[in-house]
Length: 380
Length: 260
Image 1: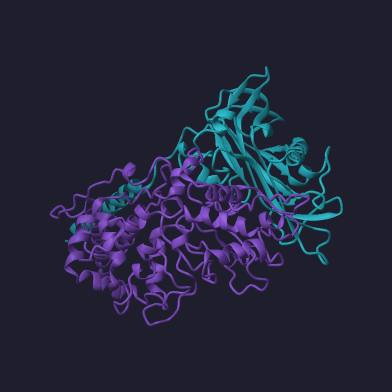
Image 2: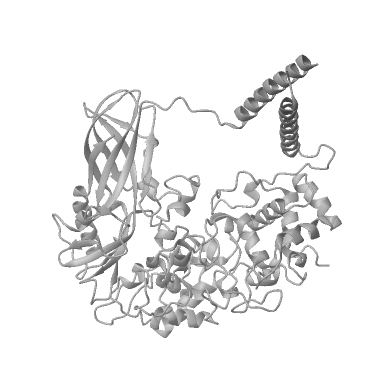
């Protein structure tokens, strides 16, 4: 005989089944998107974004670049509603005219609080695998959530942000066009990821010069600067002058940046004897890496002052002086490429410094800072 | 009534079980059933018998100097198994990037012709045309993709075949440490290696442990003291001589110690 226990089992079984069926149906619906929506995204021909000279990067397979997705990401990048008090957008600290960096040492956030580190420039991110000065994030969609939630940056809470996005008509429309869904945080991060992936910088005179076949593009000072930059440290036994400064190991190739962290992509460059910021070493909890930071690309370096992870150097002259004359060889974990020359300052001459600076100045990409495709879509 | 309810309960349970199984099946990726006739090459980086990066102290010892390695990365080509008659069977496309710090040390190769083999051969470095070709033509995860490995000089200098960087000191207590950096590059530095390896390829896949003893890079037949020379990028004549000496020592570095 089937008593009350049997009915309970039957009830429970049917309830669980109903819930399970419902959850399966929900997944299916998500997978197919809303059939009544206007979700017909237009895939972007990647060859129009990534030049052959740089090669095709490894892009996230679950977030194809689409015209709608990139545009949505661009809107979000420039929209201050992503911050708690709608005062700060991503672009507030990553300004196009400064190669998406900020011309102050430490940017100020939503409540006037200062950021912990200098705002890095943003371009050619599709070719990078580690982001932030300490390399703590390995994909752009995760990166998005950090400044949004940081109390001294955009100071936003995620539930509030999602609520805000869902109440803005243009986002209801554009999220649907880009992803086939109502505004949500996952698609928000994917849209901004798409936009940031498209920011490519390859229009400098340096990029036209590389890999050195067209020397007529450079004057003598720039060519001599190229030799110093790309030459190995080699002290003349008589004059004690080095012919090269070996900048290229950490800032090499077309991107002027070493991508592999173990080949100089992250390094202690002899700034401090006493470390106040553990950098990458603090992230991976490795004392041997304390005080190391991601080596940035030097493309557009003339636009991205101030320099270093804390913005301590205001000018390129100060940067060159550091590497030439003020290297702290006693800095813990100083990179072996710097310390392998016997702890001797490079002591570049004034002329060598000027040539090196001239070479660095060839790396400015005016196309990057004026391209309307990267600009503020809300600007009238 | 009770019979009806029992039937409903029974069929509900059956239907639910069937549904659960089908959902699970959809989510399970297909099983690869073709993994046979293979070998796994597992490069194990060692410094005086210990894991190359395990110690926070300088654990390498040679010639009165202590040293530690911060990076060891090599680029090889023509990677192959050697048949008993001397013929070679290329593994994959023959290229491989071994990077101990990037934990890129284990490589599986399948569908190798069955038979007995007597060795593994590879060349440190690349043929000239590849070395000086476009480094950006390779897919993002290929061993020759310059952005991935970081093993390219940029410009027209070609690839770095081996990067070995670290720090050394006279003693770990009183002395400050200095860096060393030995980067083998240019066509001159191509070096062939042949490792004895008795192996039978059959339906199974076994793992060959290749121990890589970094201290032997500085040992014999050409002892290298960091205090005398701590840097070579294979450029100047003196650097070329030094790097040639290191690569001659490298013949003693790699040894297949186990097949499991």
